[in-house]
Length: 101
Image (cartoon, rainbow, N blue to C red; front, side):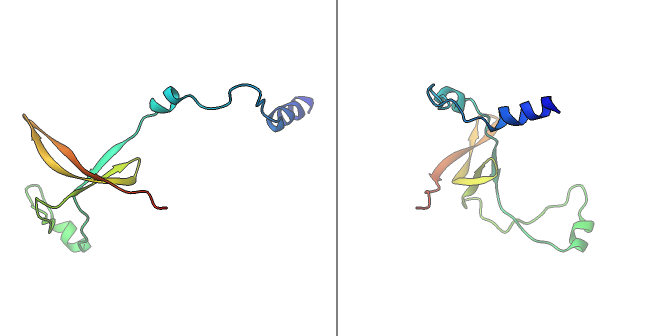
């Protein structure tokens, strides 16, 4: 019981603000961020999904010139376009999403 009370007291202690209590910028800069690129979203009915097989083509109803959406950890952050990089593809950033004020 005393051990549990000591743990609760330790948890409820006011932090020591006399020391530098800010997180260092280098710590923040090393946090991983997952980037994902979305071409588009479409809706189909379940019957159409069941009819898909290997080799089926899904019409995305989108022009190749339309911008892609760039996400960072699931949050939309910008727009981009597909570019060729030797034998691979990449995404050129066209714009960053503006912060709402």
